[in-house]
Length: 361
Image (cartoon, rainbow, N blue to C red; front, top):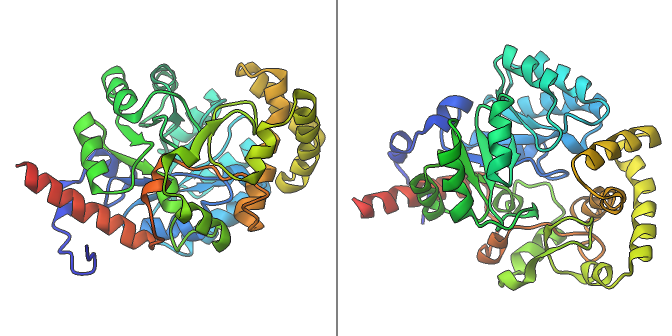
């Protein structure tokens, strides 16, 4: 369908509480994928009417303010920032966000929420939009002050749960009294209408925005995502970091799944050392972060293996070596056969949603 000739009459009809909360035109969120959600992608999303989250989790704390300003230089719209509240330097990131609250409308996060930082953000009028994979986690997040919740079904990429989007989204809508945003398996207007029917106020997409021309990921790696046309090739594996992680099967994953326990630990320890260079974290910083993972219920093995992710994502998305790195992906990649700009993606979604709603009347 052509988005250039759209009259945009759907904008008012599909304005939801999410648009009111974040100040965006359309109820579509671009999630904060580490090494992917850079200023260029976030700004392109916001300029097209969606709402983008900058992935500060993979940016050294001292450089986050510069990334915020770089994003603001590319868009007049406000955007969001995602980071871990439990990692060393979180206070520096929080200060940068609050300092530029005229540019940053929301903060997203996952495990390890910090009550003190949450209180500071609320004091300064910055919306809190955590991402969860279970309804009980959404309930806890709301009790801690969340203004909205992104709930991801098992179809989503990266770390994911087992409950499908069609079950977990309406279940969470019924369990909390804040707006719920649906994630996991979305790419088009039909998905947006389905999410609204579940009671959600919008959709959040990671893989769909990764597979855009505005995404800074190496072209050879994006091509691997486009090549996939079977959801069986995008499966959940525990081999990367000991936790359920949805990935596109590649040569590296096959090798990891064939390793013994000792070999896997040695591999993770080597990556842990390399992780220091990528993140700028000291050994002490890594140990402090590891303690949070342990408190979060991870085993010692899983905690050590968590160092694999940043190293292997960097090889794929930054270095352009999709055979040697990890390819986190939602199942929806199998249904996407071309790269489009963020503007084309968002306007096509809104136009199709309008058509679907008209057909249902």
